[in-house]
Length: 432
Image (cartoon, rainbow, N blue to C red; front, top):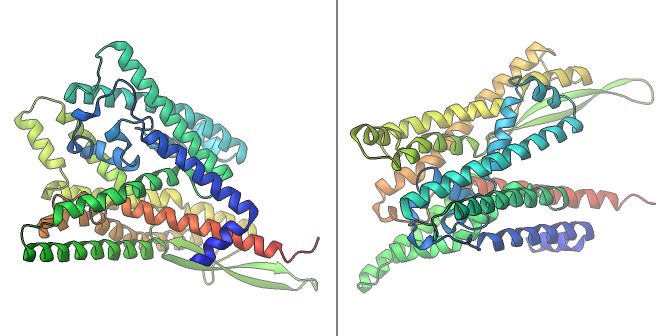
């Protein structure tokens, strides 16, 4: 690890990229600590900002929503708009589908539309959050139209600035900027969550109680680390599909060059869990601001994934979105067509339709494993507090979307840094 860090800061270009990335992340965390003017967060409770869809947004922003900071919306509007544009590009809107086939020029056009949609979503989300929290908790120090519009504009501007920071990190720094902003927010809150969990679980009423509670807390931390290892191992797991491409030698003799196509076991990452939780949480969040009736109570109980019916719905949605997003990310038809054009093939599989079917079958099989993995990780923070009651009021939950995000982003960033290091080492062999 020490040698790895030395190599990172030894290479001039890579060192500049890493320092630039750290600097931009510092700017983001600095803005995340500044509360928007005219906002009084003292009336907000942790239950208000860590339940339902608010909890998802707060987690993705690294606690920015509970402080109503300059970056309170984080990159949530950008993520949502990106997913919407990608879905609409699947032959739903012809012009978007056409841009999909135009390469870099089409990508630039799609990015421009995504940014406009991000601004619109940021304004809508900012207005909805401000209105909901002001009505429920009275967070505005001055209840006027000017104050309301001012806060919404700040929230929308902060979201656009966060999107810009993410883009700059992706272009000039290391790793995916948007993912790193989410990663930084989650990791920045971990020390405080560990301390809060310690205060919750450990009691000093007597010597025996202190020893027992400390032992339980140590077991809790070990369980957290074990789950993290499991997540890291699963996030790095791939299924290799062997392929070969014909090559020409100087003697015009055709040979076969073997290679492989890697398919991630969990190619959809944490998106299915976020989608499933959002679909169930959105109606409950709206209901929470309505007058309580028998109908609203029944709907809330059904959609609550901490209860049996809601939990079953939660699992079904995770499995559905895992298959949906995996097939969206990996287009078996396009892969088979590209292989056929380049003269490549999979051993013992005919090019064309058979190759498409084979890749689709392999993808569906490994997606079953990926869906099972996501279900286990998402279910742990729901089931464990029921079985292990000492963890019921913990700030640090075992499992969940946060762990998958942290592990996935960390692995991808390290993989990119190592790729740059390897490229530089090979470059050193070339004489000028």
